[in-house]
Image 1 (cartoon, rainbow, N blue to C red):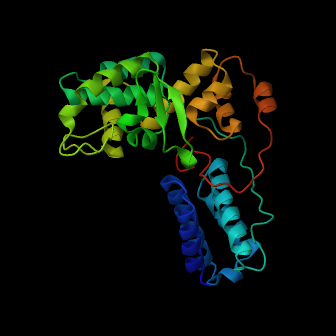
Image 2 (cartoon, rainbow, N blue to C red):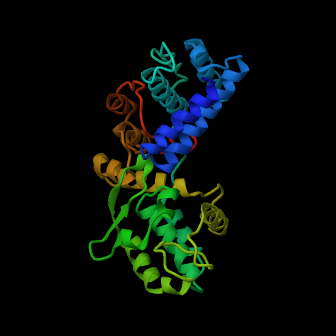
Length: 314
């Protein structure tokens, strides 16, 4: 079977298994790049893929400047795919069985978080003229206060919000994992106000999407990305403000405030504690020795979800 056909069949299998759209997109991206590597090396048939082809692909990712976490994510997809090919009898030998990665040094820190005063300045920079402005405020409060990824925020429905219980349910999280997070004061108040006026944005049948544009449709990511970019400029913040920066910032703020790291892991929806522990290096009082003791060596295992915020941080 041709490499491209084998990849397409694997993706069809994963779709049939119900993997989340974000996971499927990650698999597609990783395997498309691997197919390109195979083509450059003259490998057309999936049975002809060798361990050296897999190693060459990961080495190429390193040469392009991808961080170790991103390369681990690619490796995990390759391991899972090759294991499936071997199980299905498409290949006689698994070329990713003894896959190893060259470490390029310390895992880098996430970018510096916004300080609470900077977050306050972002909120102060928001206009307060109409329901769209109230929607925008609510989005910022939810991204920050609930530590959501942008995709998680935009997929929220009205039914995912429980004002009485002060909770928000993320139903389309990374890896398809559902989680419930508490609504803190800022997000709770903004959501309560927005929900009381959301009906003014509904056009036609109400399909239940939480955040709507002025045509009554679920808003897209570029709206939020541009909103935060403009807010950052208005607030005088001299770097690009983006949705994931808010998520990083609340994680660090909570740890600085003494929050249990397990609670922070649950809030962020990290499958692995190791991902959350990266933030310990950004908290005063956590020495390098403490960080090293908390970070065991990570072995590469097949996973069903993208890891390492690669294309985007966790």
